Length: 107
Image (cartoon, rainbow, N blue to C red; front, side, top):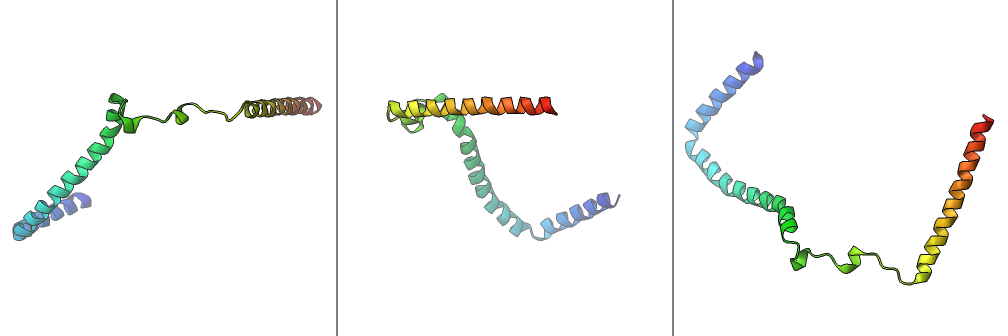
């Protein structure tokens, strides 16, 4: 009940304030409209960017560089090095799995 009465009192004083300060209210409103349009337009452009990007994929500034699409290796020795490292980690994981199974059996 108190919130309702407080709202009525605030609305009444707001109405009286608009009547008393009509010209400053219109000036404030006139200044707020361009700012609202500017911010609303910027928000719409920001939100519409993805839609434009999907519909027009062949624009030059939206294309990905070829280096971003596929990773390239400098040499085949790098590939072999990574394969050896992967095998090492697979063996280590298998050893740890066996140790874990032994620990479960003993407990």
